[in-house]
Length: 165
Image (cartoon, one colour):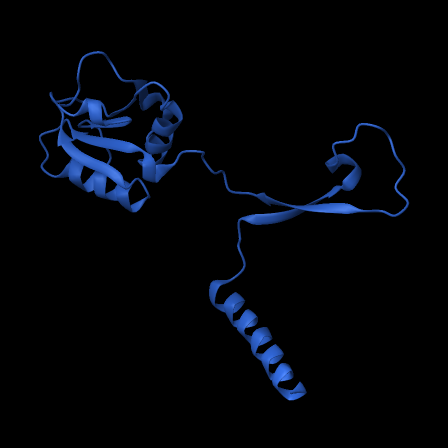
């Protein structure tokens, strides 16, 4: 009986080591130790009898609050190039924007613009960053339609002739 527990313990240790060897340690999380006196909600000064601390995981990667999978993104082709909106929509799906569809813009355009509905500014900035476009390309959706599907999108990317391929 004692031997089976020892074998089980050894198997668990090796499995854990193998998991770390295969998956590796997360590279984007550092540990930060905060003294318990600053981590507590108490505002009265106290003298702890023994030093204590709280360990907090801090991400070094900037994460957006945008729920990519829930966002409706329309990619509209505003050029005479065939397939550019479809390719871009697929790239966005691969980046986690799973509700991305390709359509044609109502008119040809020289400048690529990322439009957003009210409340989706941050999401539009996130989509623009994914497409390596500057924040200056992000604008509120105008009153006049830019695609025949505007009502279905939270963010609408209209690809212009300046879009980097």
